[in-house]
Length: 436
Image 1 (cartoon, rainbow, N blue to C red):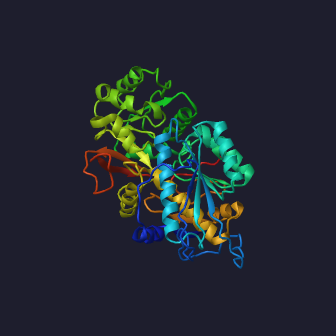
Image 2: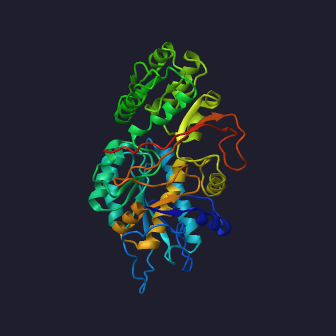
Image 3: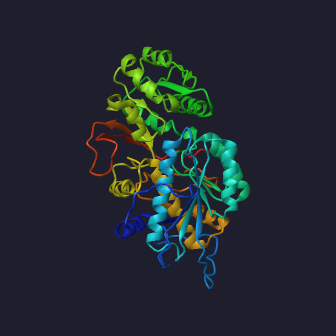
């Protein structure tokens, strides 16, 4: 039986004592050093009452406790395709580091966030992960794209250093032998079609159109939709496989699913084409919902404006309706230059807190940290479901939320990007973990 830890108490404690400052560029863009307050005995992360045997790794000998900072690595896209996702990851991790340090650190040791830009490039990502390992990090979080996540995961497994993927959904990121790679927000691509089918069936839909991109993620979503919808009674017709912009004219693809009578258009498999598909579908398919690709909501709405209202739907790992998300979002917006706290930031915040708790419990050996993460489950502020993993690092009980953009208004202080907000369409039943 797994232990269950709760990250919420740290957030509440930190919120009372934190004096937030606007987050600006550091003089050194690759390292964020925590504040150097005098060491205290405050515990990291969340420590709840345990109901099972402790993690298999023994607690470290504290007779000669180290005062060196605990280094946590961040590896995400800060200058390329997925920058809007990446800056949310960065600021979510930075906020957690600051809150933990302001609360006294981990047994008096400060956290230090060591930052690297993957540039959405597989080779660069792998190289910079190795740099982080050389810098002495206990774990790394942040990869977004599938093209970076899979090769970096292979390096993490070889180095035996925990890696937390945020939105790298490729099924190739995990193997049956993976023990150091963990998903945190986006499940494996074969799992993402289940919430779509659940919603379609709940609404009595009989026809759904699907448009995917002609690259790895799109093809993976295509296979997931075809497998999940088979025998369901909901017809997906011919899946439209479209090239990647900027040269793509989506008119024939949207017209094809509209002519087939689609009551919903699934564009989850074509992240670059979401805005164009939503725009064209308003004329060609009428007022049908279009599913997005786990995109930061402010980015999607910013490009679509009024076309998003009551039409653009998307998935996420954040529970935007919960009090703890909204409390966390207010702190985040006071800390960050971002206008909205996406689920990328929520997952990143959880990563730092989980790693800090693990270090507090078993020490700063990366192997021990990985064992602790596997042996426990975690509740984190604003996260839509319990973070717990299979033996190979897949999310064991993911229940993504499926929302649609509405005119709002948003709750006070949680959306500086506009008045728009969300309606909950469905929260998925627990997804069956993908087994490599």
